[in-house]
Length: 197
Length: 141
Image (cartoon, rainbow over all chains, first blue to last red; front, top):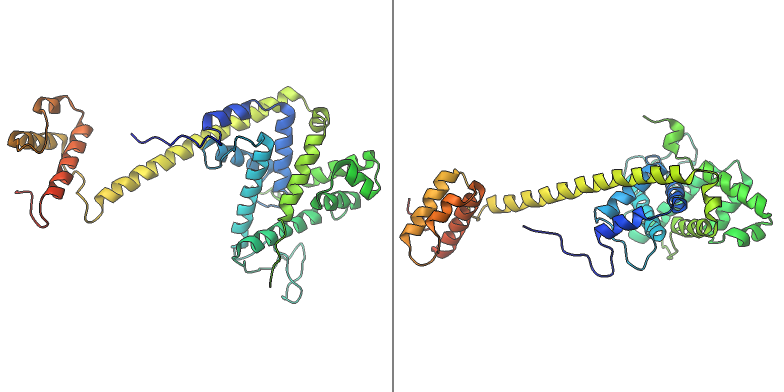
């Protein structure tokens, strides 16, 4: 009877993965869910909950590895990002790329109602960068009517956060926190907003 | 278009957002939600994911098994059993009776073996016989 090979010593076994996830505190679960919602933002086919659920299933099935020296939230963040990126690559292979940024001169316009079709370029790193930018553009559109939230998003995309971001933006912490919360709320997935059945 | 390598903007954003979340206190993160309710919902999500993971592992194992069977059924390989367990036992008894020293098989064990084990042993015998015999030679039917 064939059995799965034991995990490498630097990875958690499936039992250890299960135990580690069950040991997460409520606030860390909330962090994980917020990460998932954030990563699902701008994606039509995922909610934060469904993306997190898929990430958990991947880890528990051994389809994604949890390295021993990496925290639960870091691991989940990596898996969430990987899943969403892979989903984006599938989307860009479809006849209509709902999220592509159209270059000037390509004949299309960036318009919420008319998503142009753009052929996906099958190159690895450049494509993932384009995908990331495309999703960032989609997220920027979600907060287009909220200047403070846009500013926070811009700061985060430069790797600047918290007090440092508030200082750079010339916000007091109350204004920064309020903008952050609005940004998070606006990442409600498009699928939910459309009430797609 | 030549692309100079830059990190994925979404990855940068995720890293920043995670750091932001970790800097916040647990109370700030929960933002008034009942921790027990959050825990309960999360464990429900986890249990559902675990069940799904189990289904996937089972499906993967079944595919692997099927692939193995298909390999055995493929051209150039020993045939799968189109044979009943009783026929397999009879064939194995004949092989044991021939007692040419190549195989050791106690005939009484055949009666104690489960049907699928008997058929498996018969297939193994077929493969071994096929390996021993020169190409083109039949089983002597």
